[in-house]
Image 1 (tube, one colour):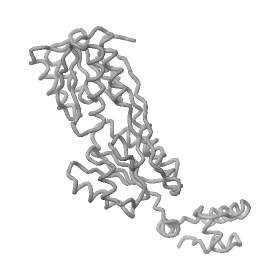
Image 2 (cartoon, rainbow, N blue to C red):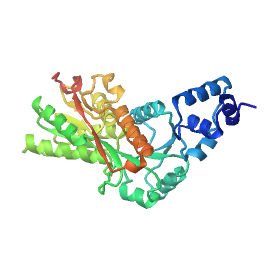
Image 3 (cartoon, one colour):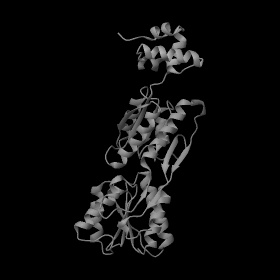
Image 4 (cartoon, rainbow, N blue to C red):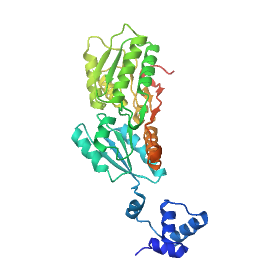
Amino acid sequence: MGATLKDVAREARVSMASASRAINGTGAVTDEIRARIVEAASRLHYVPNSGAQSLMTRRTRMIGVLLHSFQGEFFSELIRGIDAAARTRGLHLLVSTAHDAAEETSEALRAMVGRVDGMLVMLPHVDGRFLQDTLRGSMPVVLMSTADAEHVHMSVHVDNYGGARALVKHLVASGRQTIAHIAGPAENMDAQERLRGYRDELAAALPRSPELILQGDFTEESGYKAGQEILTRGVRPDAVFAANDMMAIGCMSALLDAGLQLPRDMALAGFDDIPTARFVRPTLTTVRIKIADLGSRALDQLATAIENPGEQSSRVETVSAELVIRASCGAHT
């Protein structure tokens, strides 16, 4: 049997209460006593009981992460950022998915109550009101790229609108006159803002150019189908802006399969700057968001709220978007 907290207290010549405060970080002890307790714990190879610690501190050291999907490089980068930030704070992740059904989402959220100290949520159909009705304010929540019109919860989102406008502006500046847009899911806030940016910049820069909008769902398959549809239209665009890189890569495959040369016959651009964007040929012009940074900033915001419950307030952080020009649009700067 391993050493107990009682053994550590006896070895360090302190009370059980002092040993507990030093080990769990739940109260003040002098530096001298803390050092003595830590040295005794190390000498005895004492391993704290996480269950007992949770009972004493009312903290699980677990963070819930609820996402729409695990598929694709975007989500792997997002989780990488969350995990890196969690590790620096000694926190662990409980990760799950929920799809479009409200009841399934409610069950997933409630299943985490009592198991985690707070939650990070990225679900397009979940807003602040839904969370309030489901969780009743039982724990801190940070929304990632998710709508919260009432600003009830903390949130981190991307400057999708500004990034989309910058991309369309660049395409126009490089001589493109007819720009199509492959939109993401209609209920997704990122997709909505990228579509709004496309429309507003197109209206400002090319007021006589018609909108050409094709529907996608953020997958390569939907991008491929949109590319096929573009080729059958009477008016063929000379540029395509896909609402994410996955759809842009799918569209690229369709255009190349049909014998087009990019960017000579058509310029192509995406959004996100997933790692693959720099390895496809031609390399993909896109809007870079630091996906891992989005995750780490959300985790840091949540951890701060957990550690300082009395100071918790609704706070919105915006992650900037940066135009990255590569070969697929036919221009270098």
